[in-house]
Amino acid sequence: MAEGEMTTSAKCNAIDLMITLVVDELSQDLQIEPTEMLSRFLSSRTGALLYDEESKLWWSGPSDIAEMYKKEIADQ
Image 1 (cartoon, rainbow, N blue to C red):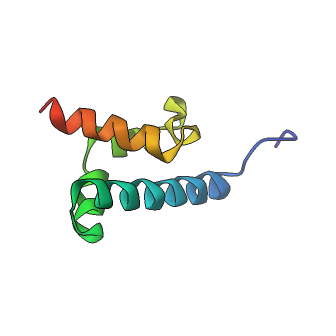
Image 2: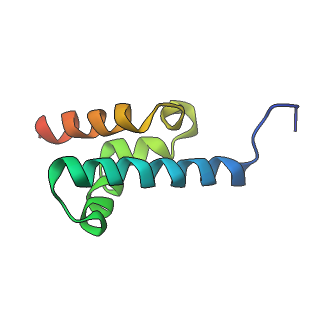
């Protein structure tokens, strides 16, 4: 592994932490229980993109990702 590269485990941990932050923010904003919000978020296109390494979405901040999710559900 080249210097500065993250291990797969480190990336997964970063994504999991990001999901926690995003779900907390969405839960408060949308007044939805965190466990329900987690389920909804993980089954969304935005949630799936977080696990797509090529998208690099997990490099974004939690508020940006939360806004992306809100736009996704508004467009449905």
